[in-house]
Length: 211
Ligand code: DX5
Ligand code: ZN
Image (cartoon, rainbow, N blue to C red; front, top):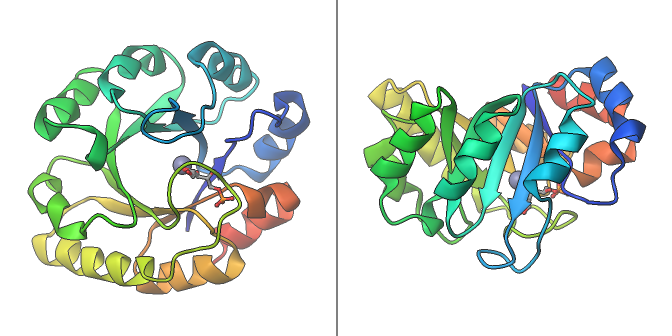
């Protein structure tokens, strides 16, 4: 299982965790960006992210929970970013946004909120690398996993297999060893976690990787 470690909290100090991350080698550092508009919380500024991530060589997965994601692409393209994920609900012209991210040579993903129907993504599956299924309402870590997400994962997995798409399914919110296993069984390829992993970074990354 691919594992992406969310470092949403501004209280996390890079020097405290990057050594542990380098040892446990998650696939990505998941950077949650919030603008106080698309969601009510605010997180990192780009210069804070730059500083934080300069301590690590791990690739970044940037999750933009913002109203105007296109204006963030250039800044993140200059960092060690592998993929930029924007929200379906935040963008009017999805095709244009996908192409903008690709122009920078980055992978592209689309996130969907718990109340958004998975079928809206079908037209874009042949153009994107990842779907990020939100299994909590975006905005903060430490919330409980929404069980209905499992049905969404399995419906999407079937669509992907039938269409022979290369898109991977990642799940974000309320992930721990138990919910992570349920997601895997439903068809997930990647798990994003903050609160569970930060309880015991090295062991819990290992547990999720081995799910
Ligand atoms: C939620 C963020 C998540 C969050 C996950 O809005 O997108 O990445 O940090 O936190 P946990 O794993 O605690 O639910
Ligand atoms: Zn996230």
